[in-house]
Length: 444
Ligand code: G6P
Ligand code: MN
Image (cartoon, rainbow, N blue to C red; front, top):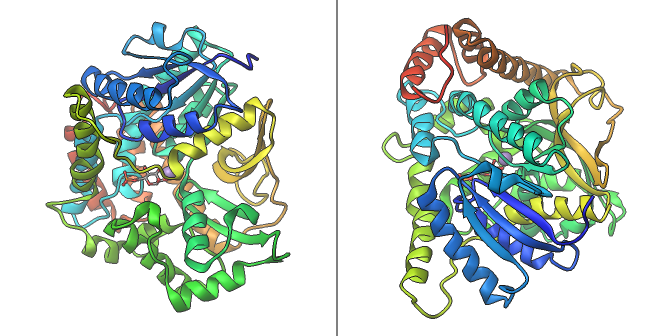
């Protein structure tokens, strides 16, 4: 494996998350020596805008002579001799995210990008594109590592597991880091001292314990108490974001009712679907919010650079998102054995759950890849039941993709725990088939 002069590809280069990844790459240069950065995107306009921003970032650090940056929509140019590939695509863009959210919501169901039927719509759209990307990597850079952020992660990684079981791909989500960071900042801990034990599916899991090295004890019991009594406020990296503030409030509510484990906040959509629907606005969902904030700010940055506006024009949220994926790449390269929550094939990690489920568990990351830990305890019936239903629904959805089966899709939709009956499942499925024309496989 090459250790210097690395070529890094950001797939979905035009994404408004790219500046955060680039910032993290720049900050990690002493341990991650990259000299070529490619933004790969099928949307040339967005990608060219992002190229301006990334060149500006690199120039600002005086690194333009050590790092070349290019934008391309040609997979051969992008992937040939690549060492690390960061994938963060959003098939159909925010326009289709809006559909994913609004179609179920119209029927009184949760309208969310990764949870509920919106996540299933997004999943069926994304599988084909992610498989294409993996195939390009097989052809042009078979030795490269793919670090995948693409949502909905369990569905995407389940499809890749079936089609390319041996691919060098790491599936990661920053949500557990964000949960931990938010909790730590609210209650005055330092997350760097933590060794958390967590299990679940992606956006669907629980902490078992959180050992704090500096305090030499499991602090989960005291965190649970504080969640119940003090609630949780949005941390500075998400300041002013009402959606996230509501999510943290719901997390405190989950703990009040189910006080034995710190949950992933996304469980609110399954455990309190009605209440989350009541808070949503059919005319203005999260997709609209993101278009009006992150997307808008990105366009303004590119415009300013194009027009040679002076001063500091960089305006993006440098949160955990970019840092997390770069840290993993650093851990591979330097054989650090850093510990991350990753989405892997279960194979006994959770002993009383089917072996072929894609689960999210603590894993060590080093030069040879991912070493998931075996939890060696049985999860309780409540968590197990919830996970099994969700996992079966996701597996049926992936079956529906590969078999182009309407029957499997309807079963998946009906089994999703945000759905009260098969009538509404069918209505939403039929509407999604129309909305996803050209994206979904033709279901027979
Ligand atoms: C977290 C999740 C991601 C998700 C994102 C949504 O980071 O882990 O999977 O995509 O939140 O954020 P947004 O601002 O786009 O609603
Ligand atoms: Mn995620």
